Every structure is written in structure tokens, then in C-alpha cells.
Length: 37
Image (cartoon, rainbow, N blue to C red):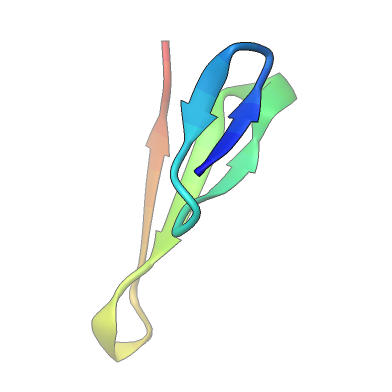
């Protein structure tokens, strides 16, 4: 798990930290996208 700016970021997620957006590859080629607050 990476730590960026005091936040723990799971290794299986891709982050755009400056936009507060993350993406997680799922089975079947699906990508789950979310936002953080």
C-alpha cells in the first residue's frame, strides 16, 4: 500500500490524486471508477 500526502492508497487502484478520482480494473474488462471526498 502506497502512502501519498498522508493517505494510504491500495495497490490495486489507479489514482488521479489532484482530481480525487480512482479506477479499479475488475473481471471481464470492466473498470470501476469512483471519487473521493
